[in-house]
Length: 116
Image 1: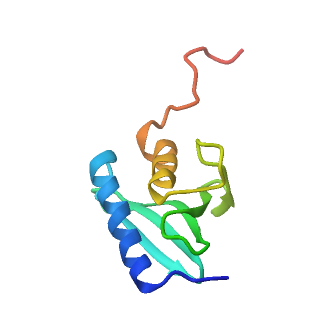
Image 2 (image 1 turned 60 degrees about the vertical axis):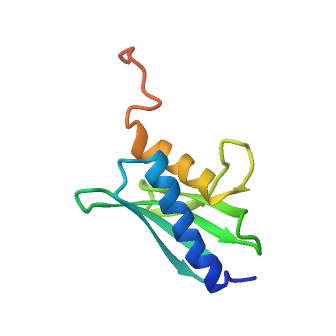
Image 3 (image 1 turned 45 degrees about the vertical axis):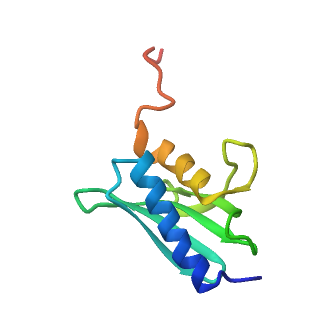
């Protein structure tokens, strides 16, 4: 399994932070840590709280990574589909997907109709 070179590690953090500044102002910054072929991505909120968001799996391309969403209910990462239906895509697509779940709208998926 290939591991990302230093240049890819550096550019990944830069790309994700640039995308977050433009699209996710609720995040103070994006933090990326590496372990083998995986990059673990967290969002830091302005109050200092850290939100685990997703894991990327490097497969040899800096522009296309495997995607796994962080599951707070299990405190783990599960391979997942991006909104495109693919299991791999750009780091920015992964950030948008995870932030749509964890940052954008905490009421997503809820209805106005009370349960019976």
